Image 1: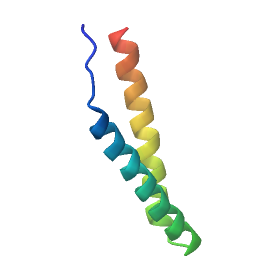
Image 2: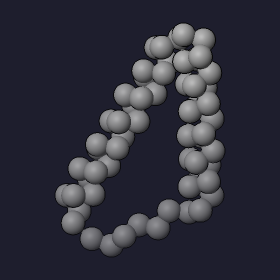
Image 3: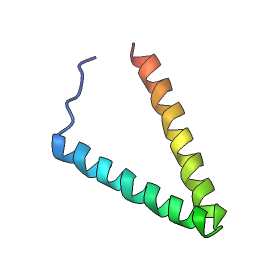
Length: 59
């Protein structure tokens, strides 16, 4: 299967989005709102696991 090239502007916007959401989760963690922080951590771990499974299937 051919590799798909992702446009650099999409990567830049995703990077900025991750930074913003991480700052939001950290701010809520400092205010003892652990629900936002927990949700961010769970979604991050889920995304990493899912992407690693997809990567292993394509190899």
